[in-house]
Image (tube, rainbow, N blue to C red; front, top):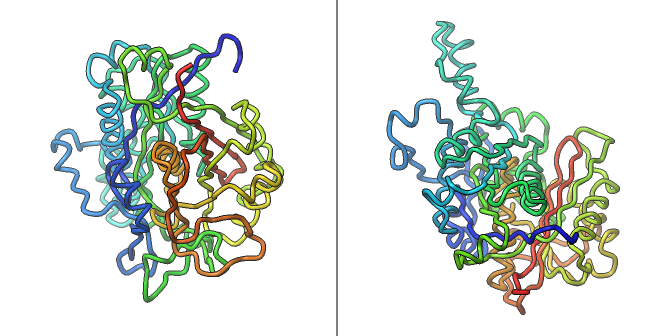
Length: 411
């Protein structure tokens, strides 16, 4: 850490996900290997959906006008995180705060409805709020309006790395003194008929398990067939350590490292070198040794190529330590939340850091000779207190982002 760089701590967590709508419920279901993956209508596909979500229970009818499902998720996760941090209300509005938020698509539901109105009904009656509902920065804007944040309000749309980059950039902004507090995370709600069909056309979606659809996503297992789309949101409240200390806030962990690199090689095929660079940069940024990392939440999408490349990248970047570190992909249970994936998986990582419990890779059935690390198959572990955790997010387009958090210690 540079001489003038500040320590950055996590004081709030919030989540809306296919397996729970609070950090505690989410993590408990991860440890219990409870899947949120379900059949998607009569499409023949499966998705990780937020079950029994009723917008009217959270928003007035007037408020819902122009508020796509993705923004609904983002607002609810942020409200949770701020209550968790004790920063809600005037405390936040008066702070030197910013919003750093990620999404892959933005308002997919509103966009699909607008197209349906135009092409199917052909009556010209497109909702006048279609544009403001679909724009990628809508959720970040709603967060700034809802919480009175007048500092930087940034949106990152970098496919699967969106929210990891948002958290990393917020970390840097606080560390370097640009803001004191950040709402950082991401949201995604692309489980619509059109979007699911588009992903299916790429031939990257998992083949649904006819007998047990909830087990369709099998990261790192030899029989894996592809990814499962998920929806939801996760938000971290980040603060300069001095601010959290002054409020005696609970500290979930201290952000220690952030690494980012681009493959610059292919729009959808992962590159070993790009992932290795991001991993090495995160470790160097943290000032820690690879042996200090006690758990890795892998990108682990359950594609044939992706899991092999990530395994190789971990071995190259971490050396022999890679074989001793538990690695799991929680996507087996909640699906791939695309732009929200990095934030959701950072919540899982921070919960592991604070509890010492390591979530498993669900539905792991058969070892793959090319994926030969410790993937914590099918059963959670309770081990010694973790010193540090790592979370990987590797995106279409080639952007790779890695975050490292460490156990908070008074200094």
